[in-house]
Picture (cartoon, rainbow, N blue to C red):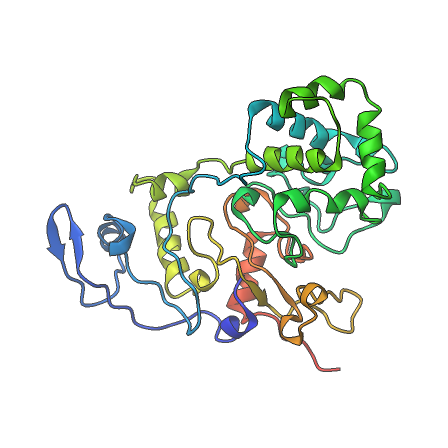
Length: 334
């Protein structure tokens, strides 16, 4: 969640001075960090710009927390209800895979927050992938996509798993197009979505992308809090929010409405020279600076999308917190 450089100090212990707050029309000045529940309630009662300032490391890019923004759709792929329905059908259709047994939904199950609950997923011929299947609940706002950022948008991303030999292994995209076109029941669905019944690879990707942009995390307590309901978080959750923003240091990489900085960080979990080796962003950029860097995931809906990290190394949020509390990874020299 934080880069390796950020986690070396473990939990950050530093004093915090809260600036002037305007609460119910009254100026409240703090000479020390809020500590009691009552003080925290007062500190977070106003709009986000009046909250205690986050504890940040040099170079961190912080955006204030807030509600989810409207989804932006590409000009060349405007949404409509029929396109969402078509995309959902394609998402669930195993005939898009070589074996006819694996669909997008095989690794992104609705009941699991559009993840699969496994450390890494099984694909074609029961091959095991090397990366954890991320939740799709926030992909409408995320760019670039995949753990290594190889895909610039959802239209491009939707095609990668179809032909990946470890995932759906369809062979080539024209074969996917042929399979979909061979099913006559798809013709009216494409006509409703695009105006005529022509099946193309581009339209398949557009429908899949539009469906994924329709997904939303559940509007839970955090979203209600971000929208202005300051009683949505209970006392323990409010303490957690304050710790997350300040001494915990989590907000160095997890901020903004999506709780991610959209950047790539090296946590020391690339296992260079070991069986679990994965060099992350380096495989895309070829830059030595990117060795071991992976995209910061959104924490929206995170409670239902474990296991965690790019390789599913940690089975629970407790394990993730313990990892950072202990100072992060300490790779042994070889």
